[in-house]
Image 1 (cartoon, rainbow, N blue to C red):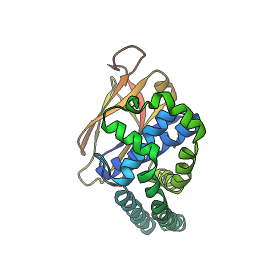
Image 2: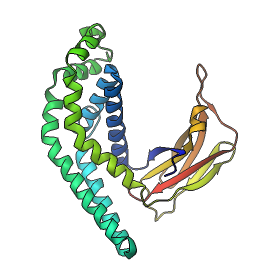
Image 3: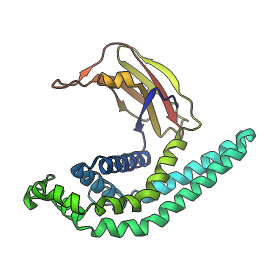
Image 4: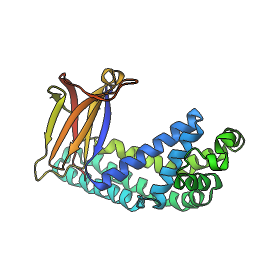
Length: 259
């Protein structure tokens, strides 16, 4: 992957959607811990909890996640048969996938009880159900920073419990596009159409945009079906509504053949 490109993933299947949502929630959780942002941490922790426990409108993500590791392993084994020159590296990748899937299985029995019983997370989940995400009903805005300073073991303990899961997911994320090339494309007048063949088993689109584009608030937006994806670029500027970009935009496309 070019370091000059910022990859933005658009999942095309429910399994990839669950994977991306959990990956991003874990990233936000770690970022909030490093930046000492308690509300962001609570929000991300609830998202992780809902996905792992299967609460709210979320189904348990663990079976889906483990099946993705299995499918990726089958894909690498197939590649090893087709490309003998890379067989040794691909066999090592398959072994790594099996090891990381096992690390997730071993981490869950310790992580789930914490997510189910921690009083702060439980209180926050109840507040969100009552449509009070800032926690006014239990005076959370008045007390959270003191709780955060005195009981930082909430985030430290959860980070340690989730570390094997986080590392496994980030490793799988790298593997998803390790053997897929970037395709340079141009969005004419800010739009493009991506057509997938009927036999393609694409589960993830990755749009690569430059840092300069993002600095200008230019973002890719995807819509459509599994076979035809419409891509357009919007510009987000402070105090203004989002507006379509009508100039040609250079970008890169990666289609991951894992659904």
